[in-house]
Amino acid sequence: MNSFLNLTRALSDENRLRALLALEGRELCVCQIIELLGLAPSTVSKHMSILKQAGLVEGQKRGRWMYYRQPAGKGPAEALLALGFVRACLLPSQRARQDQRRLAAILKLDRNAICRRQSGR
Image (cartoon, rainbow, N blue to C red; front, side, top):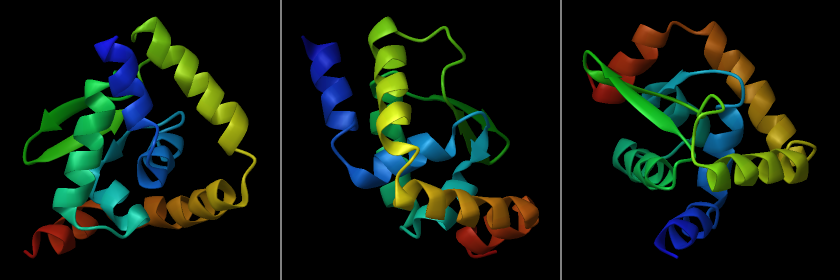
C-alpha cells in the first residue's frame, strides 16, 4: 500500500510530471531541471527526492551534482506502468511541447555554466 501511495503522491504535482517528461530518454543534471522548471534548487531537490522514493527516477551523484534519469526498464513494475501512463497522457500536451522546446535550448547551453549560476559561483 505504501509504494502505491508514494507513487500517486509523486504523480500529483505538475512540476514533478514536467521533470519526469524532461527525463524521457535522457539523463539530466539537477541544474538543468532547475533551469527548466524555474524553481528554487531546494524545491527541485525535494521534487526529485519524491520521484526517486516512488521509483520513478534514479539519481546518481557525480562530484558536486546529482544526475537523474528514468529507470531503464529495471524499476518497480508499478513505476514503469505509471511512466507509460504519464507518457501516453501528457507527451502530446501543449505544456510538454513547450518544455521540450525549452529543454532543447537548455541542452545547447554549457552545463557547467548553468550549474555555476545555480550555485551562485
